Picture 1 (cartoon, rainbow, N blue to C red):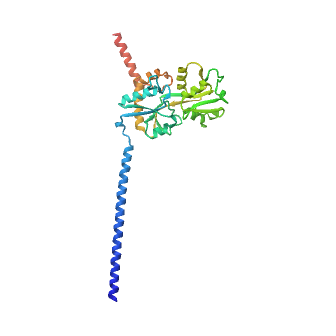
Picture 2: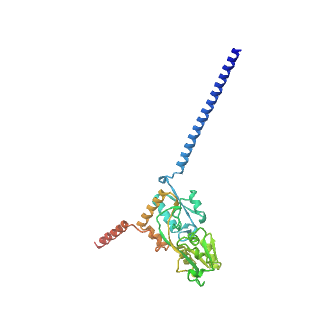
Picture 3: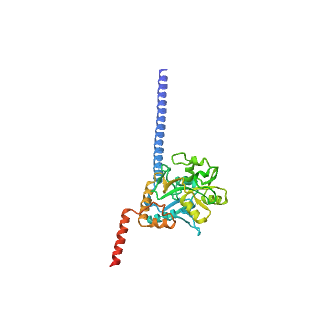
Length: 315
């Protein structure tokens, strides 16, 4: 009986040791698997992080998102080519960097999605920076703009107060719309509340057609675009002397993309120094609005060159 009891105890001890050994192997295997998975996840995260890091030194293209119906900054000319002050300036930047310019027309109300998805590198098309500074990395401002009201010459509307009860048009997702909806200091919501209605349009060409047809009484619009439209459409419209606000245009990059912004800023100054900016401003009749000017050093060099040329002629 004692031998039997001892045998049973030995067997039980061996069984417990066997189970303990199995449990230890399982725990070790689980730990090794976890370590492997953790390492793989870390490696994958590192690869993704590297993929998201942009090395501007290897850039070959520069994709500009723009409103294709926003003259004189971006539009389609009679030959079916996209052109405008902003697009020609973008091309000049690309020429300096050796990049290929990709012009990508976008719906203005989807501009943020296009930028944040990486579909475009920047928004460059009469883009108001004021009030949006926290949402984008902006270039230096290059145009002084103002929001104005355009009406038919025979409308009887002479000042902003005359818009009470009137039907006013504005581009969707535009700075003018933001202004008319803003209750902040300088905002014009109080004025907009007096309108009979505020109608949004995808583009200003359509809005002008509605104004011309009498479906709109007035149009809230950027002054540069208004002047271009009035010049191209002939007589029949006027810009009210009383403006809605003043603001500035800049190039909008994805928030935090300082490297690309700095490159473009440096090129813009070079283009101002060599006279390219002034030439384009004159071509598109916005010289009185463009704020990019030649640096003091560039101006001194020009003066020196002119003086040397005059001396050479005298000799």
